[in-house]
Length: 484
Image (tube, rainbow, N blue to C red; front, side, top):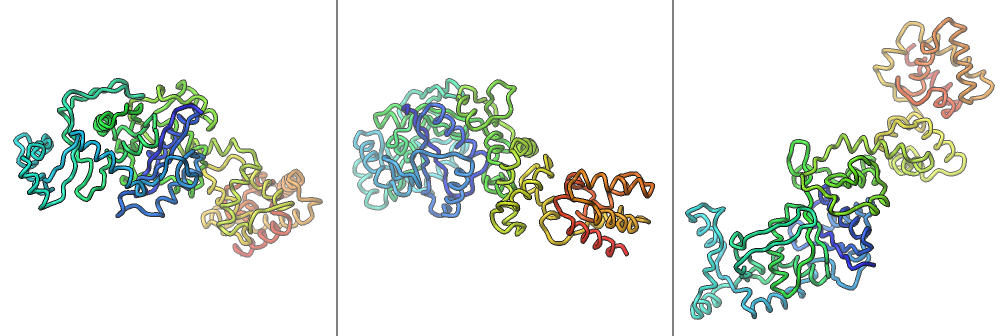
């Protein structure tokens, strides 16, 4: 295993969505491409909004996508704990070191005082930077304030600039005058995000931080903290943001569909992974379909675009349909069984003749599925006991003059068919149509509606064969009664 160590650090304050899952995927691909390790770290210090429901859903969705991790929840590892809420003891020694070395100082300013000074800034609140008031306190005044109120800790930003080579964006340089002395510990002693994430990455020996470009403003501060703690920072790579089609940033708080919802709607993990990989990355600009193994082989951060990526739900639906088509009948059947079982159309895993029959149904449906749940448009009339007739189909087909006579003749013809194989049924129905002087379609459409309830179905002769003689004859009789 190489020395590359990356991490995905979700906050369980919401469900995993496309943007976060894309970040997880790129980290997983980098780790697997380099033969390195992926660490899953849960940043759950927001006690008010973090829930077990969100945590369980995130882990389930990552597993479903096929994104495994080498260290973290459920698998353990030598550099835990992997829940930030359990790492409180990790931060104090580093805070004390910065304080002792004069790289941090105590700040007694209340939030109200800070807000007032920010509002009063001549150039406006956005231009205000902390004025280091507490750094300039006399020992006597600092002692008096210390007795009156708890102090936050601020990092003392040095003069100069921060520059780094971003794996995606290239050279980035920021003048330190644009950064104020950030709070690294709150008055209650808990670390702030920028400090906690640096310590966690340091102690977990993270070598590459791959994350969304919305974190770019944090990176110069974190690099300064890494160096103040005596270490060189990891390699950073900031991914382009994922935008909706109206140009808004997708996020769990801004209308993004959760990964779990795509799973419930019948999308394949292969399609989600393939689509997410292409949100900002391309191999040669031509290849569009990639298995997970191909992505691992070909992925490099140098091929990630600097431009924001646009997520197109219609493109995802199209790609999902293509991935379903790639499954052979047996695999497609395996994917459909849980949906049919959940809907009460199957009683558990089919075996023997029932399994072979179900594979015949799936073969008849052929390439009509855009999502796995689309099977419910077809399988209900294969698996349900009664037909739910579409009123439009009845009015357009079964209610036409002579439809009842056609169905009666078809019932006699099919009851006498020597067998119920598709070829035999086709010969029998076409012969009947010729006998009564009608085009085959004028006979086929009434029987289609009679046995499926709809004007659209898989191949009618395969459908009749799969339904079997008894159910076909019973449904034709039910249709006759419906229109009589």
